[in-house]
Amino acid sequence: MLFFTIHNPIYGINKNDFKVINDLIEEENVDEAFKQLKIKSNTNKHLSADAQVLVGKIYLALEKPVKAFDYFEKSTFNSINFSDEGYAGLALSSIKMGNLNDAHNYALKAIELNSDSVDGKLALGLIFDDYGQPDVAEKYYKQALMRDTANKSLYAIRVYANSKLRYGNPSKAKKNHY
Image (tube, rainbow, N blue to C red):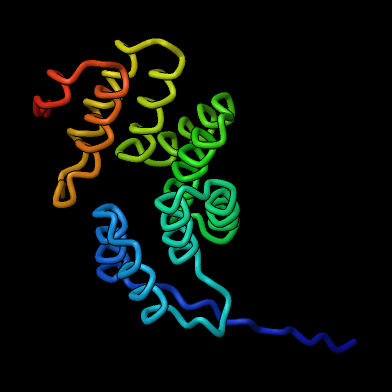
């Protein structure tokens, strides 16, 4: 018996390009991030898990959590290397869709896979804010801020500050907690 395998190459993005594009997304420069993603990935082939994570983050930035969720979900099936980022993205997408229980489970999975997951910690902060447990949320925000060592885009600080403003605490939003 003869078997034929159809090979669809999946081209990944190198770590430096991933970081550059991710930073653009976190800086809310979505148009440039998308442009760079198109240049760096081979658009005629299937997207790699790292590219799917970036597309998911772009859709989150564009306030399209359902589309983001789809890309994050695909990334978790395509590679174990980006599963923590995929699960953190699933958590953030689920929060935007109002599925807090699912979001909580996804965030915990992201942290289980990578205890330094900034997005996983931020997701838990947002979830516990929505659960009405600001002290628990504060703990996760602070952990995210401490783990966000690059801190070039101020993404974690921005999420934290927005949560404080959302709950009418502008004085805490102005403080730098790390």
